[in-house]
Amino acid sequence: MDQIDINVVKEPRGFLRVLQFVFAICAFATTTNFGSSFSFIVKCKNETMGTQKITQSIEYPFRFDHIIVEEKACGNNYVFSYFGDYSSDAEFFVAAGVLAMLYSLASLVFYCLCGSSYQNNKTIPLVDFLVTMVIAVFWLSGSAAWASGVSAVKYVSDPSGWIKNLKICMENAECSSLYAGNFAGLNISIIFGFLNFFLWTVNLWFLYKETSWFQQDNASTTGPGGQTPI
Image (cartoon, rainbow, N blue to C red; front, side, top):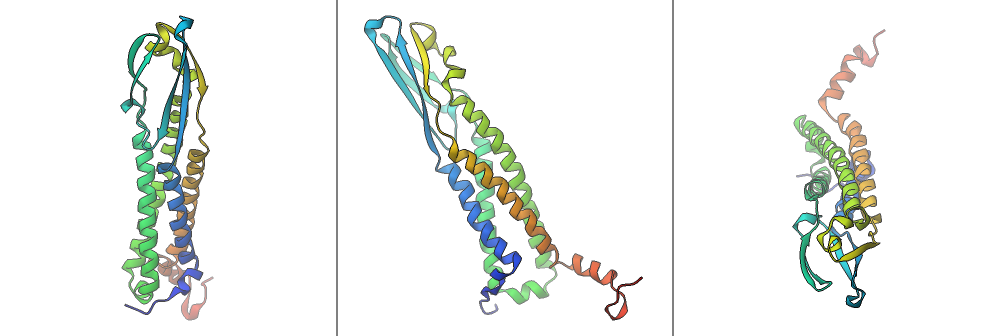
């Protein structure tokens, strides 16, 4: 093991690892820590029974069809659930973020502690390049899937689109949407996702320059004595 060398952070591949670590945390934290709610009002046709407000929280992992609601309104007991399970999109996005965070931290520590091994061993830079490529693909696919998932979550969280189909609203009451929730946090998580994809893709060029592939290409285009053949 070499002495700790933090100068690698001043190089593009090291500096980008720091950015990747920070923005990966931002991406999955804005998703897992998201919290909002939607609500609607049940107004009984028999005005003597009054009105009732029903509020539902919105949180990770967004399994709306697993929510069982029990309410007493207009003299009757109602049990119903919402629709849609978007946990797969959310969990894949979060998994990509956690994987990116762990690998960026591990590789940065390796850069600082084992710099000479990275430079002298031809296999390590190739592995680093290939793993970075895989994580970049994860960010692209995860961010695209999560963008679609957020659109679906927004629809489910807007009662005006489906409220008339609830049994409680079809029988003895008139229902109206009151609040559809605030999704600024999830919109930001999508932005962080595509920003991470950009960072990992850009980093591929700097890692490629450390591989034997790049060195072989330079050797093949350079003639004897370092001259480029005509």
